[in-house]
Figure 1 (cartoon, rainbow, N blue to C red):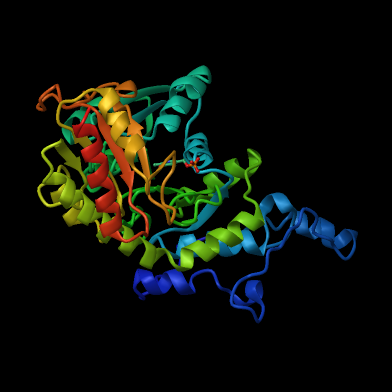
Figure 2: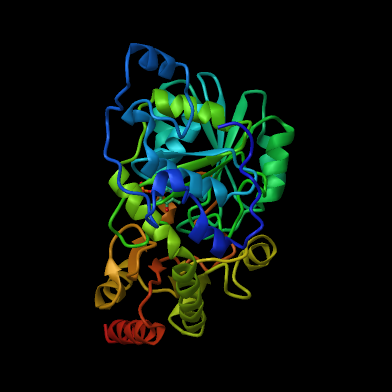
Length: 404
Ligand SMILES: *Cc1c(COP(=O)(O)O)cnc(C)c1O
């Protein structure tokens, strides 16, 4: 699709409701039907042949290029990113950064990755890209000058994540993106924590804004999907290479994601408010050494979050004061309302024991200025339950580890 999306002056909450609902896709219904299709039939051979030459979004060709249900979701995500030209969809969140990287890298290139990035994306770079002759170097997510000094002749792209989805460092995205662009690097941003309504990735300097739709957009722990929304400069090559890689999302999952998108604003507000309440409560507890929640005044990254973000979500990490790993795990096991498991963004609260030290390459975990005894971390996803019930649950779990 050529050109940028038309600037829509409405607020993000309004655009979440209106985006992607083109009458030619929805018919008289509010939502587009689920178009399950592989084959698109043509009138005759001449029409089939003519169709070959029309290769753009929103035109039927073959199921691999999607149909109206997928286009409605892609279109909505494009409309939510000022400055975007188009969006590609993927069957998982992980396939999104993977395909964004494959669109811009070739053998001999170097990729720079912020050291707070999502673990499976790091693994893809360190193993798979390495085997294809692309080297990866990591940089401290808080060190803009250090990043600038690392850029070399072979550096082709930078992958950023802010806040880091385990350790919550907030990067100075505008500064990192401007530094990278001045040297001709493609800027890829995993924007899953904030999403496009709380952080406009492209407007802040990204060339591609990446989402695990599995999280906030899906919102109900019942689907896996990813997306990459790109600028006019990068969208054509992203689209070309992703189609060559055979990437497409299921129309059923896209219909669920569209349903999730419509309520995302209220869900994120509730999760943010409750998350902040839990973060405040935890920061008063004697058992807790650090609360890593950018929305919490005084927490690491709060100033940059205030400067650059218009919202947040209830995903954050806290670190126990002293204690061992077994005590951390007993605390988690004692929780009743928080499910133990991966992912986040659903209606239900989750808890996860995390091990950031296993992934770090250049920036230490725990940070060097902490008491080294404070190291066992817990990540919370705060869902839509009543926050008083969640606090009571944490309270009884802390009581349980006091006794042992
Ligand atoms: C969950 C997540 C992904 C991957 O999404 P999946 O749908 O689980 O594959 C990518 N990036 C971030 C930051 C995530 O939190």
